[in-house]
Image (cartoon, rainbow, N blue to C red; front, side, top):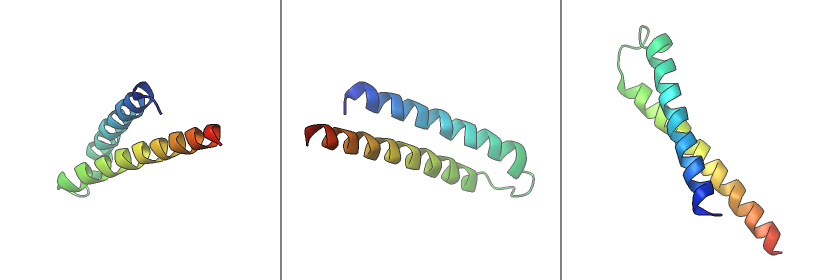
Length: 66
């Protein structure tokens, strides 16, 4: 796992968080008038994306070493 791969995954996680937040504001904010659940959902989705990518990179790294 290189720093560039980790940076790329973190960048796309940030982009996904922004996208999910905008979708929340567009479609769910009229129904749920509180912004904080949208922020929490967006950050959770981004964190899961980054976690799964890092786990995949570590599995690929360990399979190359074996």
